[in-house]
Length: 82
Image 1 (cartoon, rainbow, N blue to C red):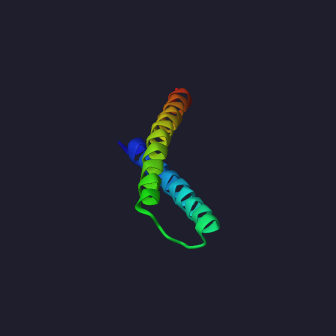
Image 2 (image 1 turned 90 degrees about the horizontal axis):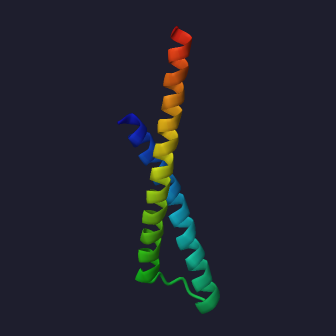
Image 3 (image 1 turned 120 degrees about the vertical axis):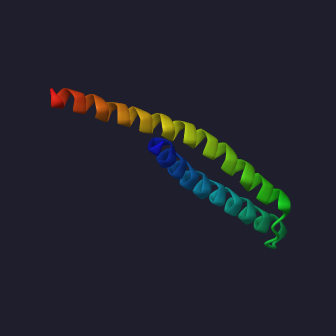
């Protein structure tokens, strides 16, 4: 269970940073085009969708990496105990 929680935390942090940067970039482009900082709901939905996609991909990746790391640690401990 612990590798899943670690993977979830790392994936959530990565997804949050990337989604926030994407929304900020959309707002800067909106400001460049219209000259005002209006936050249309579409940008928020796009940010949520970006967060979900990145979270899903990063969670899968981090879970795989955490399991591989745990397997290596278990493998090492088996060889050093003998």
